[in-house]
Image (cartoon, rainbow, N blue to C red):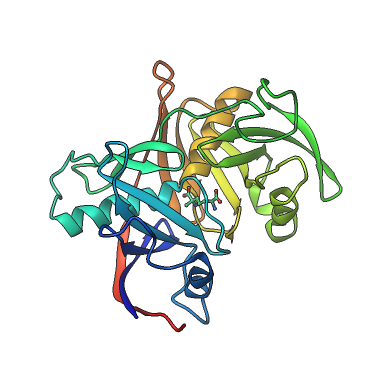
Length: 283
Ligand code: ZDP
């Protein structure tokens, strides 16, 4: 069977997008997604994203499989790629156009900006231990600067859910972090029942954060949109940052704005189409 796909990236966080608007079920399985994401044996990607029919009044539904086949609730860089993909598929490329996208993290609304970027209403971050979820602290408590032992070191962690779980640590120098060693130990730590995405943040200025990320189910990636949002929330909760920041990731910069009145968080950044092709699925 052949299935058309489009390869996208958002700041080097890359995805295989599939037009799945004519069926409520993803055209490929998580087991098929894993080899497609492989950078030697497949196309190469951090995940596969499906544009499915809308539900609960939304225009479309987005589902994602990570490169390990697990399914996250949300994907910040992915939804910018999704918006660009849908705009092209439907010819709806008018600036300021919005799309209502149903995700496992609820309704997310990307908007095409006149400058050719995508600004996404990422919803309201969740901050209690039960919502993240983590067993750190009591269930109705925020998890702010809590000591956690990982890889023989004690880290002061702050946890935030953007629909998906994030554990954020502020450090003096992100380039000193042994991401490939420390990252998996955070991801699989017993205090995170759904595993976790892990961000290390260096405060360059109160409105400029430098971030490195170890993603749940995908490992070290060049960018993570939900992680950038979660990190600004953590920055405000810990007093490290302002509510509007530039977040510098290995793949480039995102603008994150946490509206203190509505509590909604907005992410603005690019999405780049790279190529199209046909998947050949061997069964
Ligand atoms: O929560 C998870 O399992 C993540 N790996 C999902 C992907 C997050 C992403 N990198 C982002 O930009 O938010 C796509």
